[in-house]
Amino acid sequence: MKPKERLAIPRQKPKELSPSERISSFDEVVSGFDHDMAVLEAERCLQCKKPTCRDGCPIHNNIPEFIRRLREGDVEGAYWVVRETSSLPAVCSRVCPHEFQCEGSCVRGKKGDPVSIGMLERYLVDWMVANDRNIHVACGLPKDKKVAIVGAGPAGMTVAYYLAHEGYECTIFDNLPVLGGMLTVGIPAYRLPRDIINKEFDALRGCGVNIVKDVTIGRDKTLEDLRSDGFSAVFLGIGAHSSRKLGIPGEDLEGVIHGVDYLRKINIGERLHLGKKVVVVGGGNVAIDVARCALRTGSDDVFILYRRTKTEMPASQAEIHHLEEEGVKIEFLAAPVAIHGKDGKLDRIECIRMELGECDMSGRCRPVPVDGSNFMIEADAIIPAISQRVDHTALKDMDLKLTSWGTLDVDPDTLQSSVPWIFAGGDAVLGPQTVAKAVYQGKIVAESIRRFLEGEDLKKDREKWEPVGGGKKKK
Ligand SMILES: Cc1cc2nc3c(=O)[nH]c(=O)nc-3n(C[C@H](O)[C@H](O)[C@H](O)COP(=O)(O)OP(=O)(O)OC[C@H]3O[C@@H](n4cnc5c(N)ncnc54)[C@H](O)[C@@H]3O)c2cc1C
Image (cartoon, rainbow, N blue to C red; front, top):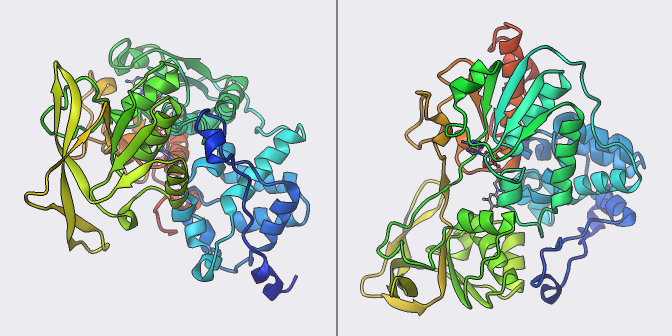
């Protein structure tokens, strides 16, 4: 096909449930491409000599190569190209913020729509499953060394994946009754169906990974206990699950529930009815997921308060579009200043109008309150969703070095902590970030732990194997 013809193909749009169909269920909203759409979309790729899409992918998937194979009809080969660099393609293809990563770096995006890389990756996995192909890598021969992994999120899953495939005996401990970390208790099922996560854990179990739920490290078992139980190394992939408070009067009233706490409850299966009118505070993906879940659990008047404008919202455009389609309104340039109530229960939220003040180097402008602009909103519930911090319960018996942000302080090349047999990665190190970045760090840690267990130098020739991407420049 000539380049001109490729340029003329419009970006393919997947089918979606209509807003009225989707707000009464947690069914997946976006369907995958069918074969014809996938091939047509693959034809849009220009196969750039310097593939900037690959640099934009935190785990550095070989995007041009998998697209080339896909359009030549080798779908299975294309899948295995992705699998070389990704431990979780079924997950990443659905939830990665592609517009800020691979698609945001696609050359075609400069003058139009980028190639729909996420949907193409998803097609490969869907095709493998639909055609009954094995989507998992063969397991390694057992080795006589044990590793404990604290946290069953994507970072912990990735460490277990790579170490189990090397034959090390891995045990994952998680404090929740469900597995997957924020994949399960954060991201709602309408964006990431649970059977996809469950299959990943089945595969890990199939490679001998032991999985222990409902155990809190630091409370039910300490890090030292793990050491005494014969684990030679420990990975801390505990995420960032502690909600940041608004810090305004009235935050302890009934009817205030913080974003990740609310999502955790409903994702574990608790039935929560927040009332008719719900106000969500924040502008990121968490706020959007909270608002869309509140609609799906029976609240019919849900809106978001955001202190900047739409341009500054960190959430992805696709998510904002879905949210607005479902009828959630966003009140821009407004922030809560106090929560008022009667008999211990909130009934009104006092807000103030904001305007944008000085902008920083990145162009992000500081919201400044407008004096005397206070106004009241009646509400049954308020859900602050303004970021999370690392919960330090797991670290109780161990004097691990922390950063001023309260994240774990680790060696940037090896992700080894200040205690040599303890490694950390994912949100526990980066603060709230993304699945792909957690996967990337999981890969680094798996290699560090392997070297640690084999008595090798953790730092030697790191650049020769280290996966590029994840914000790191190729050396
Ligand atoms: C609502 C929401 C939506 C998101 N949407 C997206 C998205 O669309 N795309 C994207 O890329 N990212 C998204 N993210 C971010 C992404 O989910 C996280 O960056 C990623 O899950 C971090 O992985 P992790 O393995 O480091 O930690 P987590 O996934 O948080 O897993 C940590 C696990 O450790 C467990 N744990 C913590 N302390 C202990 C302890 N003491 N003992 C035992 N277990 C413990 C936790 O319960 C949890 O299961 C979203 C996050 C949220 C909250």
